[in-house]
Image 1: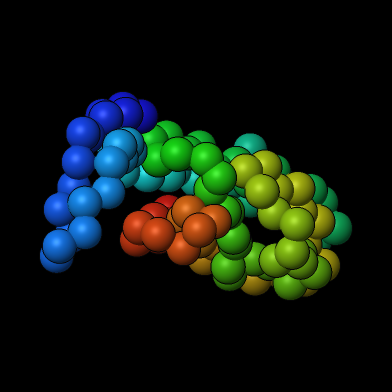
Image 2: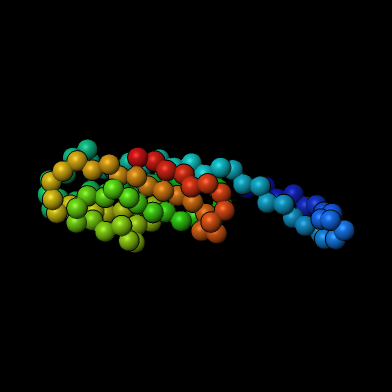
Length: 106
């Protein structure tokens, strides 16, 4: 994250000074699981590795196995599936402020 001071910005006829422009690197995310398959009522740990961006970031999960709640996720998600099946889990990361496009990993 880099900060660049700007002496003045002209917006129409209004001059606002001083201003700091905050430039952040794009958010990147990858998803890993500690196991490739898990038995019903077994546990799995899902980890979202996030780089770039600037705090605060918001993490949300979709496509979780039956029995795993989408609330309370965060960067590390512990889950105990209650039903068998194939699940396509996606983790979404975006700025808490709503600025910038969300990033995802499946």
